Length: 45
Length: 370
Image (cartoon, rainbow over all chains, first blue to last red; front, side, top):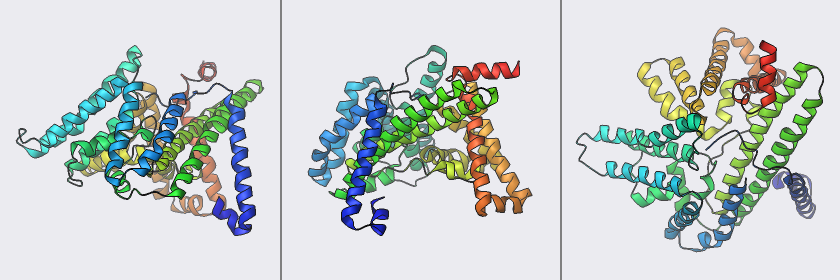
């Protein structure tokens, strides 16, 4: 994604955008983590 | 998830050690860390793996068996015994399957088969244990191949971009498992489905929720495994390549769970096709093996048969109606028709394996067919 951003933005803005994107993803994870994890039923090992 | 988090913590903590030690020690130290972590978390699993691997190695390095080939052939069957016993026991007595058994058994078969074909030289005991005891892929990891693993190990050198790519993959994996899988498809969409009124629409939403959840959970766990591998400096093969962008079922199975489907292609489909000269027969058997690998039960047999028929249908259409196939696979609009067809064909075939998990779905089908 970083390489793709660098095509359209200067490096400083690309860095900032990537940082915001990762922060956003991290917040999504934290938001959804309070649900019951381990609901992984596709495989039983 | 919790077990995978422990693995991630172990990999993170030990990564400076793995990167800093001389190249000769990289494989050994990873093996040692994995051995310690697994002996603590799943001692029986380690015992089964090491004993079957040890016996394989003994057979490879022993002339007692007289004929070279039959002895090596035995090493192909050896890792399958615990797999079949535990999978059958799980179905009938609800035994707990040892951690990662399905994956390392197939890895062992892969190495034995390559040795049988003389495509690879027989590995030394430590080399073999280094390959098998690789923590990132122990839990749900791809069934990675030994030659690639060893190449990656030989080229092991500090690479900051690899490390950061690993961290990125971990984040994407977490998003896929927790947000897209658990939150969107498992919780929100299922809730939405339970409030939906027309019955068929509700059923449809539940089917989509099951398949979407399975995909994101599984792809997420594969991302975590690949990310952990990158943090240790080893590139593991990809397991998913945007499967729902495939335009036909044949292409779909080249993109979904690549490590397993390529395993079945190499070690079931090719040998059987060569022996029987019937591609459809080889395809049926390899899809059956692929299905039974998940669980030894009737519903997976049906699921495997459905997958095989869908692939045969694709091949049939390509032969009978080449211009239609051309439209589906190459025309921009046709490609989207193909994608919609692939998603729905796969989602509806998953009804067979989803019925025991999604209670309402099984009830729904009983009501539909009674």
